[in-house]
Length: 148
Image 1 (tube, helix red, strand yellow):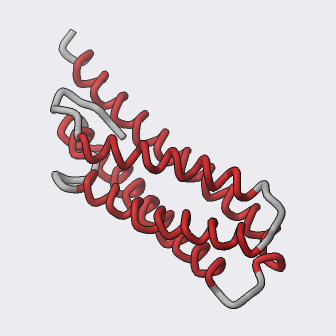
Image 2 (image 1 turned 135 degrees about the vertical axis):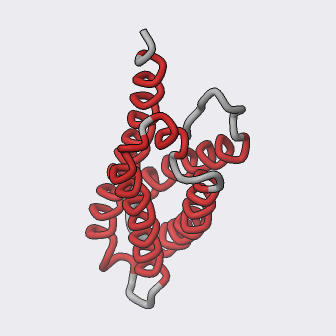
């Protein structure tokens, strides 16, 4: 989520808030003992995230992904493209995790590995958002500070 001199994008703020809540619920579920009930809740959360993250990316990309960065620093296009591809990969990996949970494999047999994989994925998503924000802040600060 990023805020610039343009108006705040309300749908993006709402998506980020939903994502934050879902990730907290996901963390809590991953710490519970594996059960059919846990598996059902996990599938529901992953389904919602699988729906939410691509919509968030679509909103971010409506006027061009990190377009504010590229307007301020056009030579950063390769880094912006890399972040965009990374986000899409995070979405694909999330779908794979969801597919594991809804497969016929008993949840108890995949819970430990899934816990580890999803924890790593959540950290990667957090780092991705941090990189987006840092890139935007740096670009805007360089643009503003460049005229001094």
